[in-house]
Image 1: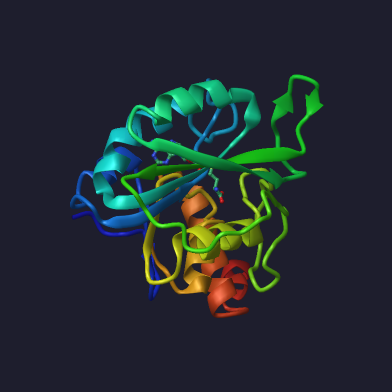
Image 2: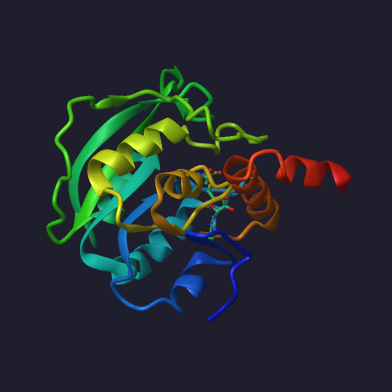
Length: 228
Ligand SMILES: C[S@@+](CC[C@H](N)C(=O)[O-])C[C@H]1O[C@@H](n2cnc3c(N)ncnc32)[C@H](O)[C@@H]1O
């Protein structure tokens, strides 16, 4: 199996095409996939295209446990496509609205201030804790260092922490196949979950490594960066 680009006590970040990397994983490895795939039709911002999400779906289904969650950050402008494509494999469960002021998405009536968080399932995973906030605040966990130069890529860490805590639970392993700067894996690391992250962009992988290092072992990674 391919070596990770970096690893922590709990996680591994792989550099490469997610479908190729996942082909080295056994069936039924993950309790949840939490991810933020590209949604553009053309690769304008070096984030890849929506096709990459559609192409990796069968592989995600394979590596997920029989009873598991798929949680996807996605803009409302393209809901019909993602619902149609994802429900070929997974069952739709519900959605949350995330307040997200730095989004790049242009809505039909102006700039969007929200994102959808769509929840799908494979099999019959248990809801861990019922909760009543279907609007999730776009806030950051203040203990996480955010070096994010492209703030619309970085997803609010407190929102991901709420989703993990209430839906997925703790003694779990999660996968983010479009990990970018690592806003989802860092939350798993802080909450003590095992995680696997994949991204094809080496620049984002390196920023993710520094953010995790800086958040887990404070004030070491930034010094390392300033020595470069
Ligand atoms: C919307 S961004 C994810 C942002 C991420 N949540 C963060 O915290 O930075 C989508 C990511 O998918 C990655 N990507 C696109 N196609 C991919 C593929 N086939 N395999 C691996 N990564 C891919 C891009 O490099 C980009 O970092």
